[in-house]
Amino acid sequence: MSDTLSVYIHIPFCLKKCSYCDFYSIQILSFLPAYVKSLQQEIQIRTDQRSRSESVHGVGMDPQKVNTIYFGGGTPSLLPLEDVKKILTSLYTCYQVSRDAEVTFEVNPGTVDQSYLSGLKSLGVNRLSIGVQSFDADKIKVLGRIHTIEASIEAIGLSKSAGFDNIGLDLIYGTPGETLAGWTRDLQMALEFKVVHLSCYMLTLEPGTPLHTQYERGLFTAASSGLLTDLFMATSAFLEQHGYDHYEISNFARGVQNRSQHNCAYWQMTPYDGFGPGAHSFGFFVEKGQGTRDSGRVSPVRSWNLADVNAYIQALSLGQLPVHEREMLSLPQQVLERVMLGLRTSDGIDITAVEKMTGQDFLTTFAFLLDRLERQGLGAVVTGSGKRFLLTLSG
Image 1 (cartoon, rainbow, N blue to C red):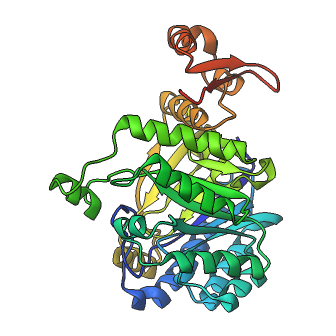
Image 2 (cartoon, rainbow, N blue to C red; image 1 turned 30 degrees about the horizontal axis):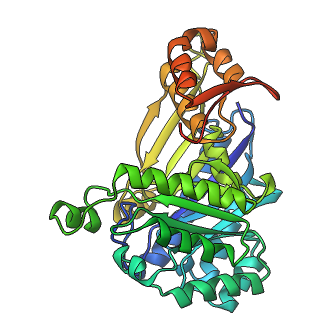
């Protein structure tokens, strides 16, 4: 069980919702002042509960040591700098934030200028994730983005001028009508900026989104599985050829030091606190019933907040946490989650860790499945710094 924590801050405001996005967001910016106040209240209430040993996080630690902070959305770069300062002040007051903590801020092209980015830097933000998505004007239009190619180029340049060297770009492939040649041009353009991190996401047509509705109406043909496979394989080969480490299904970094430490914490099942509507949290709960069989037992628990800004603000105005639901994870759920998260990364499944959880020999328990994957060239057991099972690129 980790003695560190990650923090996610959800900023659910957008100027316009993208056609592919199913994350919770709203376009009513007038809610921002009340929302920021509610975020501060949620942070404080959780801290108060932790001090009374009622929190599901932070076993044996008060305040909890934080190694990563991530502002996601939505569009965090719509937050006035004064509000960013308020939120960070609350976090630094209520948590023990490491001096070298990774503090990431998502930025959308067209929403920032030099003054804003310099302000973020002065407030302690040390990593930017810029939502470029594409350098192709037609593709940007299909995705429902409101920025231009020029705005993306400007945002990257301004970020560097503001002193940021830990910059990541988000790109999307598999859009309607996309070709391998077109996607390769996107990657080539991204390389010109010499950023240290690239996230390349395969487009998913999520039910309820405008893009999915267009698909259901027959307005376009979705990319075939064969083309998506070709795009994925080409992405990995191209970026590794140019010095990027393919460390997770969708993520590439120039060296281990430039990986997204926040996302790595998720994949390693490190506890995290999520603040804001729809935000998820994960941690450990100590059973407190005196004299009962379960007293002192540590159990993993996941929780998520109400996905509605009005309900979120209302709950906190009454001094209540806006938790929608909590789920205690059973041992089979824990094992499945650790296995599935491990398979996402180049580090693979930590076999020893799974064996400690189950008390069973991993290779024996999963012999049939592992043998089948190895024979098909989809995975392999490796040894070195511990015994692990890794998927191949084809896997």
